[in-house]
Image (cartoon, rainbow, N blue to C red; front, side, top):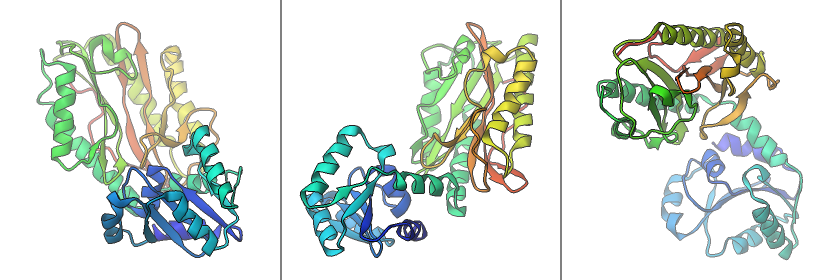
Length: 357
């Protein structure tokens, strides 16, 4: 974390500072979670500014920068700017509303500091966060491990007559019991016709024999997310169900085979999309093949055919093609992988052939 702050400092022009207000990026640079506060980085120092609620904990935990407990944030910032002769600050426009930007410009202007309109800070944070460190990869691995253990256990609970909502509740309980901070998103545990909805919401719909059951799930471990989707059949599957499942499985595997440092994110999507399109189901695959994962469940890069971002070692992406037949059923298979020089490391270790439960 201190290395990341140093990287920011190395990119600061004279008499300027970076002002970081988003919860997620404060946590990224300091390792300290809080719902309010700011990180203020100058060429020579870094300050984590928190209010009384977080002061004692921050002073004990934060090592990468000086902790300042403020009564009024703008006044503490004014003191720092005066001491360090700051005349311009860069802010996170990607994490700020227009109203917030306007307010900060006014507050800084009150003590003679300009808020730059340049997105230097956004670009620096983007470049840092898109490639994961060994420590970040380990936390993502742990999040996936919790997800898989909970999923395998909850499959014993999936039976005819149980509702989608009951399964989601049981799954979240198991994740937390196994060490998760929480869930990565509202868990998707859907069945039957609901599986044709890519982001279906668990309902009181009951599990029925001869239908698909789809789980799009993930856990959070020390701030880092996992993301995995599996589709299984209850008791038995029709020929059409097998056919669609096999097409999606082939599309996903072919896309995974393309993942490595040096290729574009768009190639991964195009590979999966061509398999599904050539099988005659292109119109039923309407979302991107994947996305980055880390402190946010959806990060860069977006894995879509028009994205020419070059994959680098340490990036973490999902590969999740699907086919969704309206009012019938849908199939999605999703793995989360870390890009390596000559391929990828798949965090998922769960069977992908069609499982009948």
